[in-house]
Image 1: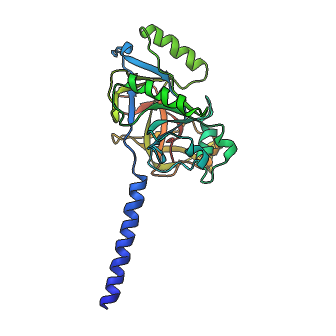
Image 2: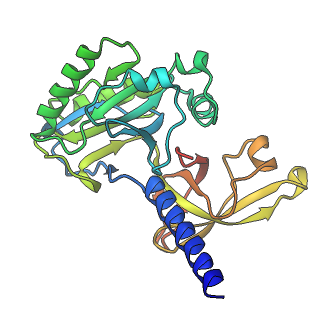
Image 3: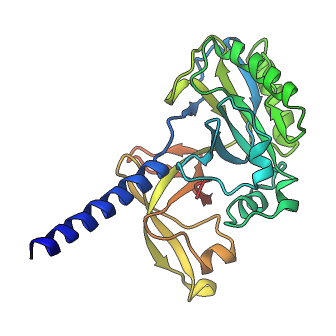
Length: 283
């Protein structure tokens, strides 16, 4: 009896260790997240870059992970090309190619021909010293030393005023880009959501959790008609636009995190003119 109990305890301890190990592997790495550019921000103090519509990927010097903490199933040759220095950036294919990119990087068995089209756009050096301006210069040096076309430094430049920022924004959006990012030039490395990093897009966007699927009506009978979502502030609302037929037939599962766009927030806290974009950009 004593032996049986001992065996059960050892199995329980092993299982607990496995669970803890799995949790540690999938733990979300601390990263910097952007706020929305406000009207009173001095944009001359920021470095401006394109907002790449890709998949966030964090390299710790040994392992490439999604924002969720899960390991990116990249080919061995792709990983071997990355430097020992930790990096933060986006896996990117091209403008308006997010869905195609997402399909590529989510495959448990990577396809070499697909990964040879994917660039790693680097915009930050995790835990590195100095200002962001100094770190961006270091990124350029690291990328140049790698001599690998798929590893790219995100171009960071200044603007003289809001008018120049607006002209640049209009031009880049007209060309198919998602928008602009502004990173405070004098900022040390920080994580969490902060005004150190700001985004400028034609529409605002954020995330919410899927609470339930609402059945479709009319031409959508037999499909998902809308999603009931819950925001981080506890606001529950219905999202009924922006879905493709494929998404309506196979909607994001309950409990998953989805991204949606909106124009403004109503007095009751609900988003106005909300439209579905996609599942959050990491598995």
